[in-house]
Length: 218
Image (cartoon, rainbow, N blue to C red):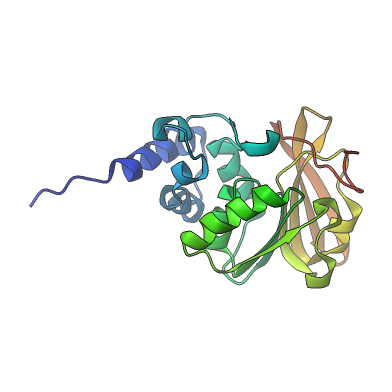
């Protein structure tokens, strides 16, 4: 008996095929999650086909939801494992949070805009993502009470790697953060191995500013 595929699932599969696999992203765990997470739910009021477009999209309060390729690339770079405790700086729409929550044991997410985080929280709980902890505050300072973290992802551009986040990185841990100017950055990866920090730069990217004590002034 022939069954018709869910058109939204089909659209997400096309997004993964054309925007990720075609550009060399091949971590099947991450790509499977990108197919499963309903990106269209994180851009309310927008036509579904627009939600899957190959670009960042504006959301409430002057923030953005990252381009699908960039979400996948950053997630692959973070190399999240099922036992990991992950800190996310910048909840935003909650889309990246949803992706991380399907890969990690638990996610702690910090957002400076309370209304934005509350909106994301309601959606994530509605989607059954119950392994996420929320805080409203200065994300550049991390979440020291819950440190150390195995993985830390920053979804906003910083002028430097924020020192408080380095301090909260566990031995064997990895931090991924866009570092550079106010409008253009390079994806920066910091690993803590045997007590030493190893830093490398990767993809060019463009994120909203990380505002806070260890980021840009507000």
